[in-house]
Length: 352
Image (cartoon, rainbow, N blue to C red; front, side, top):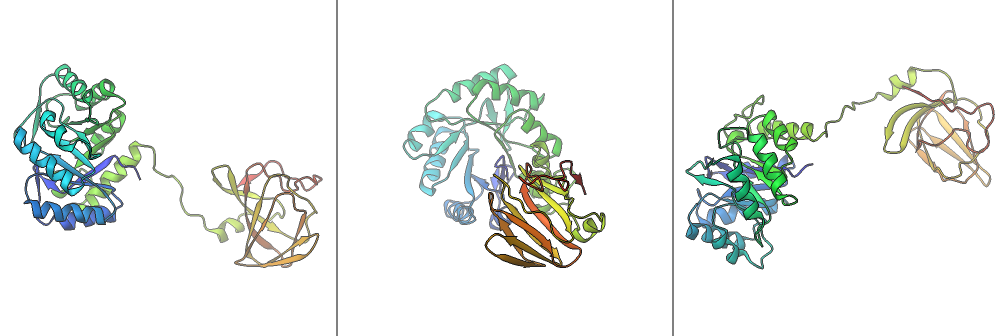
């Protein structure tokens, strides 16, 4: 799963009461970065929430929405004490950097002029890009946090400009990611990630049921689509596939797995003695019985069993029951008769 999505157990820039249940729901979906704000719960509550995030196997994220130097320094100290993995937000790196120095904490402050709660971004594209470049040039700053959708104007265009200005340092986009179109824009602009909190908790992510699991599931689906990770593959019914052809010793391609072919073949009688110089083969019998003859022994393979024939080993498959139905897994380069050749060679395989 992509790590671009950061779930924030927060609403309107504050960590919410009952955030434990939200963390559990996000972790159950496989979300690997989960965060909270420096306001909304007291230190004890935030420490417990951080511990729950880590116990779930996720990376912990703290976003600072306090915007004065003393409060940011205190939030940075909290992040260090808790062992937070990623510190986002804030506008005063001079107050934060001395606190986190030497602790291995990744720190990405807000780019541009930020004010209010919920935090809003202001300034021209040029001003925000220049500020992002200034911040990214600082030692100890890992990237920037960009409130692209908390400002009027072309959010996607601004993201792309900031990404170009500070690369290879990452940009995390925050604020009002509430639709598949917004997720797609974040990915297309090259951002390293985005936060989603209020929209999912309030049930306002477009096109999804209001429950949190459905909201986050829709965001994850949108992210997978934007990153080209949606599979078009469906299930294959073996009985129906085998029923679709009658000829024996003529494998059909049932699927492709990297540089491997999964093939379906019906066997009748004995094949030819042959070997494959470089390809190993797996024979999985799904119906009937197969006798795999080797030069030193015979092996009977019943339905529900498989046998692997290593490359270079001479063998001769024989169907003990007819038809014997077999699933083959072998490199795409494999020719059925191997080095033997002859009239039973099939070089142009059909697909099921």
